[in-house]
Length: 111
Image (tube, rainbow, N blue to C red):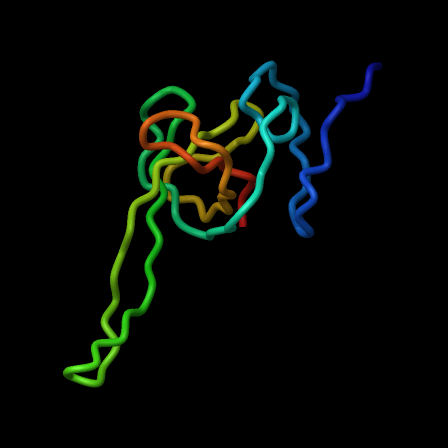
């Protein structure tokens, strides 16, 4: 039995996946580096190959009315094939170099 070679991403709390993939843009098995912000959100769409849309909700303070309002933002992220995530899962994404015109994040795992 051969062991699966995985890289340590360097983020505490992130466990590497048990499956192996041949994806070059995978932070665990490829050469993609994770740096910058970490965001937690819900995977809303996972229809495109190796792509997903993550939605996160946050509170915004309105100074005029002195109240908070709930806002949502959608972030495009790459989903490596070694991770078993589906729509509706809470995931953690990390910032990387730009992978395409609208993708600068990669899914690191489930929460």
